[in-house]
Image (cartoon, rainbow, N blue to C red; front, side):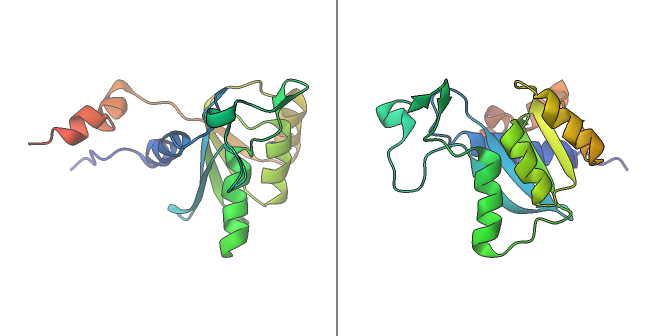
Length: 160
């Protein structure tokens, strides 16, 4: 008997994609899911500090080409773990876009052992070197046409 369910990596990445839909950034919507022992322990998306104005409402606050208002998805997920007391040591992170250098360093310091990403995004050479030196596994998650069809909202909403 074959298992027709969506594979774990695509399942968790779909959660990150879903989280990215809550992003308040107008430049790039990113989502991140932290997983330990095949259980989601936290999720985050890029957006403003809770209670502050959002880029979708007032535009990005750019300094040197970067929005300083936005907290990255990876940071929001790791901070959620800190806020609610969930250990990140040995966990894995699924992120829609390859982490920036600062997020890569934060992921390493948090003890996360594996990074799964959907899209390349300005992959920083120093971040790549750090990940290699620290023996952090990095996996590019891809979806087959069948897996994309399995998570299609049209299919989900029209299951008669």
